[in-house]
Amino acid sequence: MIRLFKHYIPKPVFALGFVEIVILAVAITMGLTVRFTQLDLLPIQYGHHLPVFATFVIIVYVSMLAVGLYQTESCRDIRIMVVRLPIAMLLSFIMMSVASFVLPDVSIWRSIFAYSIGFAIVGIVISRIVFTHVADLDLFRQRVIVLGAGARAERIRNMEKFSSNRGFYCVAAVRMTDNETQIAGARDFDDVRPLVKFAEAHEANEIVVASEERRGTLPVAELLACKMEGFKITDATTFIEQQTGAVDLESMSPSWLIFSDGFVGSSQVDLVLKRGFDILASLILLCISLPILIGTAVVIRLTSPGPIFYRQERVGQGGKPFMVMKFRSMRTDAEKNGPQWAQKNDARVTPVGQFIRASRIDEIPQIFNVLKGDMSFVGPRPERPVFVEELALEIPYFHERHRVKPGITGWAQINYPYGASVEDARHKLQYDLYYIKNYTIFLDFLVLIQTLRVVIWPDGVR
Image (tube, rainbow, N blue to C red; front, side, top):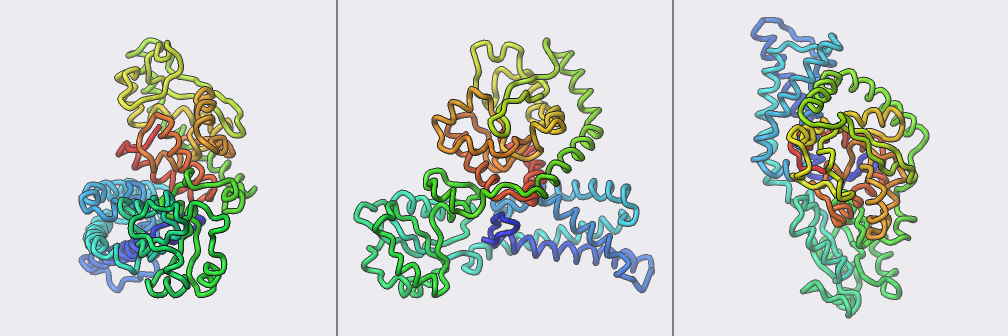
């Protein structure tokens, strides 16, 4: 894993991203060269066009990121790439047109843009085909020894088998106590001592401590010797977090919360930047979305009896309640039998409501909550008080998600499919805790950009 601004990125995906940035830079250079050669505008002063080059690379790269082309499954599956790449290029054209209008100095001829996009598509397709063949090479995979053969160790072995990430290879599992019997073929610890020689023989890069009971069984001297020889030593909870982008509730302990890296809160600079962005983006989006707001309000009024807007109490930062504002998408008697979880294909949703929920238009009025300061653009989704009370009894650390402002979108929303149960809430909490633990402005940017993917392909949650 590569850690960038506290966020973990798989090595193959990071390498692919770097290669494709180079491809985009070469593509715009070739596009300009071909067009200028056709028009006999030689010699070309490439230095004068650097702002255009940089703008093209940034816009196309961000567009690819926005439609999910750097999700692990998208990188590995050519079929997904074939669907999403044209959409990314269309988005690039729209963004480049806007940039050229706002900043004339970075405007680009449509002919040059067309040539550049053509070269970029060819280069990206080639890079993806190559990637599918080299992503699983040992160059990009950690060779891991797991100390433990119980439930935690089995979880790690299952991640290796079934995860689309596959950023590691488990070369051996070591049984630390007689009670750990869930991994067949695990070696007894006494049979692999000295551990440093065992790790060297298996060409391991990392040792993950995943034993169920550490008290009196943790081989401190052996692990210290491995550490001094350059082997990375990681506990199971941290390892799972790095591989999944979520904090594992099953293996997490209060001491891990206290002593692990992260959960340090946001600096004053981060808070000021986040609040400033929320206000500026809210005002801009209100202006842009005004026709949509008016049109949606009219359609709701004409097609369904009842109010246009729907206000509902939610739990915000510090457990403080506030009234969230949305376009009404359900019948007015939707909760005549009491509060209910929202369901996929919910029968209470009106025909217009189905569209505005699928397109996320019903969320637009929450911009007023952001302006007021009750919410941010990015953060854990706010829950209703009645559900918070229920979930807090069922799920440990649930109240920790209220350490930050709730958001219109969040890390859980772009990583977890639609769900409406206690178990779904447990999974979403793991992503929320990752966001809180590793918060940076960079992570907010990633969430905002990738929210477009959830709108186009609604595999996220509300």
